[in-house]
Length: 178
Image (tube, rainbow, N blue to C red; front, side, top):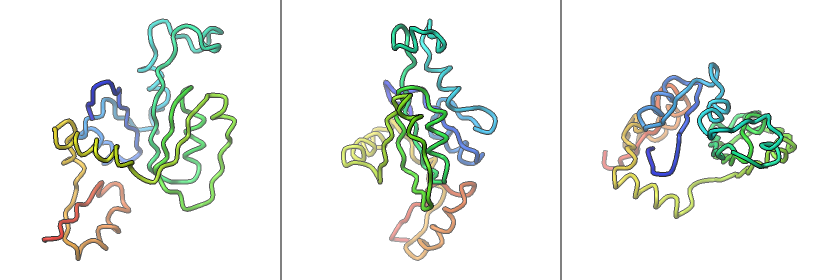
């Protein structure tokens, strides 16, 4: 996860197993959102010297400003996007990758007031995929920590069932030759 010009990377998850994965992948700060707000922690980490969120100058966009953050949503449960809109710092980018299969409700006024960028994506673009492969090949990212299981083709159905529990698996690699 240590990529030049990026950071700090703050990983927040209710699952202790997934927090361990984030540590193994090199997240700078790993926390339990039940104990510490990731949005508050980002504000602490991204605030430049002299930043005062209550100052009229700051509110007008003058003077030191908080660095914008990028928030990845990969859970896909109702209410999580609204929670992010409410908690995200000004000018943050929220990338929604999680697939929520139920009806949900958001209040756009939170995003408008904070000038948030809300983006829904299905997967990687070809450039993002290529860049990820290069980072893996060059050793900038160690993906081994995420591979928590390996199966042959006959094990794919069970692998999907196993992946339903975040405390058991992160990624299961399919090796067709097994």
